[in-house]
Length: 104
Length: 170
Image (cartoon, rainbow over all chains, first blue to last red; front, side):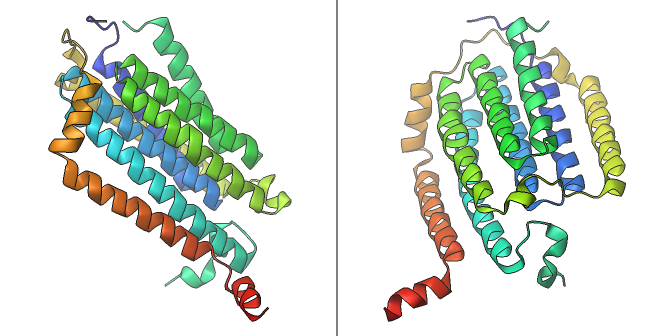
């Protein structure tokens, strides 16, 4: 496909929508697992931007960076879920307002 | 002008992302998250990046979503089916989301990005593999170390010391 019918701005708008939804989830939800969902959605919005720019500027750097970003996100989720399990074992809850000993 | 595939994918992705955060049950929420991540993989395919799309499906839809599902199953049942959120912050959150979307959207609509189109051929994914092994190899090694370290760290964090001590005394 040489001529793309979609423009860069279309992918950008989807990315902004995903970012907004993620920020909403981070601001409103108190469930630690839901907040992890929101973080994942934000990371995906960023990856979508990287790949869109790589396509429209015809440079492979964006795709490479997106691959690195996906791998690092996998590591982040593994550690985040382990932290949630430890906190759940201590407080028997996943509500972040209950994790009191982390307050300064 | 956007085509029908793009429209369908954006509806799937954004709808699933909202469902992932708003579904009452965390299990359905994580399945909806799978849909959103798969939708992003579809966008990667539309952008002629099949390598990144396959990576996204293997890592996100295949492993991260399953990992989240298993964690959800470890949590007590009443916590899975109850929503924990501040009702007061809900409207503030929606307001923040709208301000962010409208602000960033109008900023980008005004910028020069609107006129960018391309008639270049897509990048060959073999070039990315070559880049990985030549120019980016230190970063690749570092990433492998970070992944190994994080998985070990997660195992150490989630380890139950009381059970481990019991097994040692037996």
